[in-house]
Length: 137
Image (cartoon, rainbow, N blue to C red; front, side):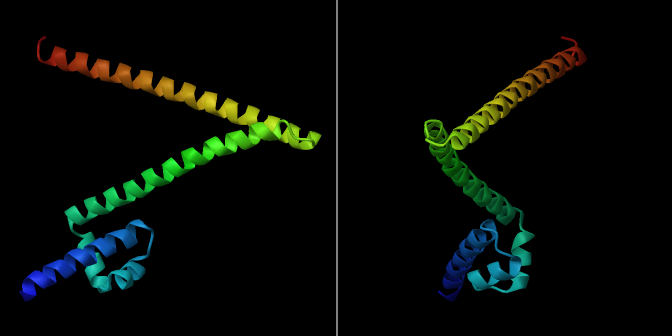
């Protein structure tokens, strides 16, 4: 019974440790939050499975944050569009500049992404062709 309880406590501590580390806590802060020693933190970080779980937890946090930023972008774009109709000439000019600058950057980013994708496709096709020639196809 004691061993089963210890395993549950370890599982709980791992969960707390993962959450703290994924959230950006220092090793010492994470140890305190999880109720484990600093040595335990370092020992857990040596475990490949634990490190994979930590990477997944961090990835999930990034995904959620990205979603929130995307939603905020829509609101920010609406605000800029509304400022174009503002009473102040300087506010309208600033909004217009911001919109034009952002539109240019977005277009450049889209073009760069398309170019990178084309290069990746060319590279993949060349690697496939090279591999087929190596096998005598």
